[in-house]
Image (tube, rainbow, N blue to C red; front, side):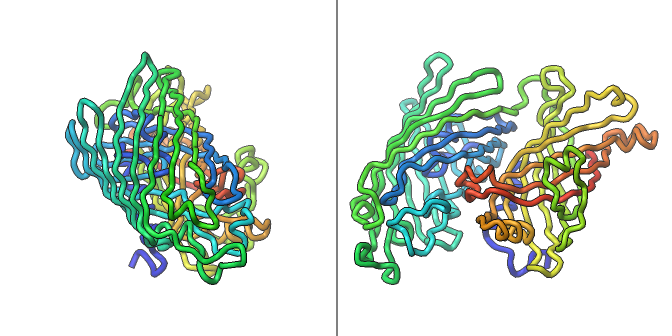
Length: 466
């Protein structure tokens, strides 16, 4: 079998993330990101990439206000969408309604860095992955929507049903969207995140089960175009937990406030776009782990793959051109998805990894007419079914945590094989070297597990267009 015993539902979700890129906007984003996804109107067939600074009052007693850096990834396809922390398939869409199935990341859980005293000695509650169905009905006076979510990561095993209303307002260039959401959560979900197990009880923290209940959340999102492609987005929200949750000995009895402010770049093909029938890009690569820092590899100061573990990677990626010659510059943008195999050489079971990223190529060199040369830099997200051995080793040595979901960087340099061998028919076939880099964002992103550090693999590749 291609997929070994360790292949999981999370890995299936990761593969779905890859395939989705080639098939866009769900009914609402994850419960903690409702104020962002709806503010980025990526055109059909387009993509967006950005970031947001996010704050929220921790629901846990003594948790204070949490600050987070959130990378944002968007794609709007005819049948599939990717929005911030959610990826899904459009089962049916008309001008008046839409029905989706999706997988989303649940941001709830104990903090991974600064643990408040109220949670000391308790087993960690991990963020979750939900499988869900969503339906929305558009009316002249607004949009009604509903969702059913079920935990598939094996943490809580809980379920949630959401109903809400939102309305779109436009004031000049400013787009506003208020929304009201009611979320009915079952006992499993609330008990997992906000309960106290008998083995965790102390004199000041009795065993407790919040049971089922209904949250109420009010939010306002905003979007403002700074240019044709840059968009400023943000919003605020207030969430009121049910009385059973607020009575928990580990929960602050208050209304939970949150806010976000960010920037998104829209890669939708508006001008200088590739025409219909854009070619499919196929990339095959093979590489080895390196102890070199990604910046030193890019500066040609370190290029050794002589590591102790000698782990290796191989991957097939599919790409889709989005923009050719941005603003008339020799600069193209191509989106990629890939399925990567880690050969762990017996140090642990081999694993699969899914990558999705947008890559810029610069080719304005004086010699490019003779031998087309491209410098590339890709940014995106990577999900591994288990943390690769190299990351576990390096993070453990530094006493830092690791994560299956991380930011992904892909710098590279390549040359036209057709130009090198004098075959015009192969001018769009490239051979080159690159770095496959997984890491957190200096420990600043809860979505990426507050990871500070990661792993690098130097690889060679061939790429061609079909």
